[in-house]
Amino acid sequence: MENLDLNRLPKHIAIIMDGNGRWAQEKGQDRLYGHFHGVQSVRNIVEAASEIGIKYLTLYAFSTENWDRPAAEVTGLMSLFVDTIAKEVPDLHKNNIKLHFIGNLSLLPDDAKAALENATLTTANNTGLELIIALSYSSRWELIQAIKNIAEKVQNGQMQPDDIQEATLEAALSTSAFPDPELMIRTSGEYRISNFLLYQLAYAELYFTETRWPDFRKKDLMEAILDFQSRERRFGKTSLQVQTND
Image 1 (cartoon, one colour):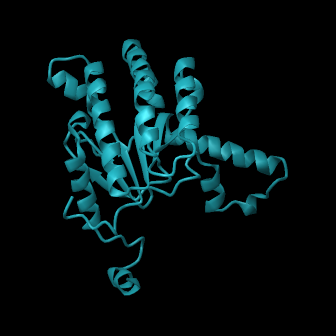
Image 2 (tube, rainbow, N blue to C red; image 1 turned 135 degrees about the vertical axis):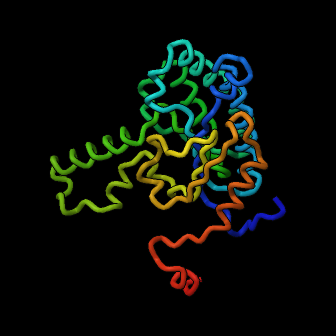
C-alpha cells in the first residue's frame, strides 16, 4: 500500500470474482464450499477499497447464464446470498457503504428480493463507497433492455431517431448513476470479460490474475491498482498528446 499514489486511484473498479468452484474442487470439496469462502474475499476487498478511498466497486456475483448451473448449486448460492446480505448489511451500513444491485432481479426468489430491498433501503443515505452487486446480470440483457426503452420513447414520440446519442444509451443502462469502471480485474486465470459491462468497459484497463477468488485479498487488490497506475491511458490519443495535456 505504501507504493500507491493515492492521488491516481481508479475511481471505479469492477471485479469478475472467478474461481470459487475450481478452488473448492482442488481442495476436494464441493463447489458451494468455494462460494462460502469467496464471501470472505468479498468482505476483505470491500474493506480495502473503502479504506483507500475507492468511490465505486462493482462485483460480478451471478450471471444470467449461471441459472443454467446444477439446481443444487443455484439453490445453495441463493441461500448463501440471502444469509450473507443479512449478516453483512449492518457492518456495511456502519461503515457508510451504500449498496446497489443491477441485473434481471425479477428472476430471483422472493427471499432474495426481500434481502436486496432491505439492504438498499438500509444503506440508501450512506455517502462512502458505493458497492454495486451485479446479480442475475448479463450485459447483453442490459443492452437489449436499454434499446427497448429507447425504442419505446421513439414510438411514443418522446424522441426522434436522430436524437439518439451515446448519452441516450448510457442513460438507459442500469449503471447510469455510476461512472464507467477504469479498472477491471478478473481472477482465476481466465482472459475474457464474460458478458460483463460490455459497453461500460470500453476504455477500462484490464487486469488478469491466476489467483482464485477465495484467495484474493487486499495485497492482490493493491498489486492490481499498482499495475493500473503504471499504465498510460491514452483514449485514442498519442503518448505525446497525453503528456502535453498533463
